Image (cartoon, rainbow, N blue to C red; front, side, top):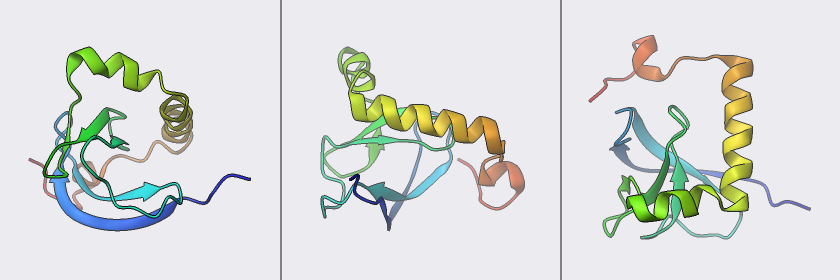
Length: 102
């Protein structure tokens, strides 16, 4: 049975692709906060990110981007997020006047 996703707040950072505020994450029950090298996905622009040495989300090195996007768990989450975006079509917070954008 899949483990539930746990929601957590973290230090705020901006997505390096779309500039939306990223201030939390979901994890799959492994009981850890993001650490350097962990993979993340911006829920606003669906860009695959990795956490750098300071645990800030950054774009992965170009030579690793395709490899990371091909991981089964990443593909599954991207598929789910794409379907959710199409179904709900909710604009990101900055487009709704809720949060400042970079």
